[in-house]
Length: 195
Image (cartoon, rainbow, N blue to C red; front, side, top):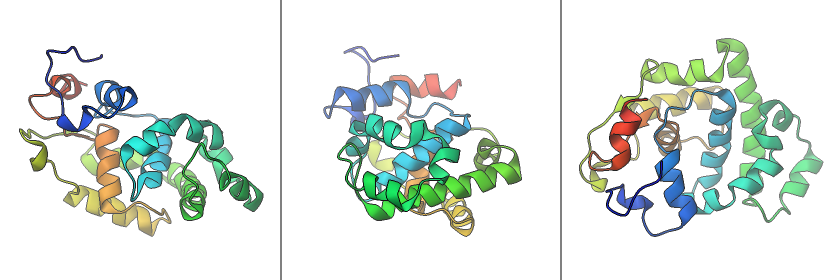
C-alpha cells in the first residue's frame, strides 16, 4: 500500500525520501513474525544508535549484502578478518563497535532461538503475542520508550545483546509491529490494527 496525495500519514514519514515514505507505507507497524526479519531489524536498529533512521534505511541493501542476507548463523561465524573488511565497506555504517555488536548479537540471537524455539516466540512474549494498539493523535505524544521496552532491553542485555537500549528496543517494537504507533489520523493506522 502506498499513500495517495489526499491521505493523511505520520508526519515523520514526509519529505525525506521515497525510501523513507515507502518504509512507513509498507513496513512500519506491520507485525513481523519471522526470525529472519526480526534479526534484520536488530542489526539495523542497533546500527542506527546515535544516527537517523533515514541514514540506515538508505544503507539497508548494503547491510543485506554485508551481513549475509541477515542470516544469523552466518553472521555469528564472522571473524576478525570479516570485521576488518566491514570496517572498510562504505555501503554500511563503518563503526567497529556496532559491527562487533551485530556479530555478538547474532550469537545471542541463536541462543534465544535454542531456548525458546524461535526468536519470535521470545520477543513477542513481551506483548503477550499481540500488538499493542496505541491511539495517538499528535506525533509529540508518541513515546520513545515504554515499560515493556525497558524490560525487553534489560532482559536482552542480560542475554548478551549489545546496542539494544530501551529507545532502540522501542523503535524495534514499532518497526516490527509489536506496537502500532501510527497516528490515528494516518491511513496506515487501521490497516496495521487489523493485522
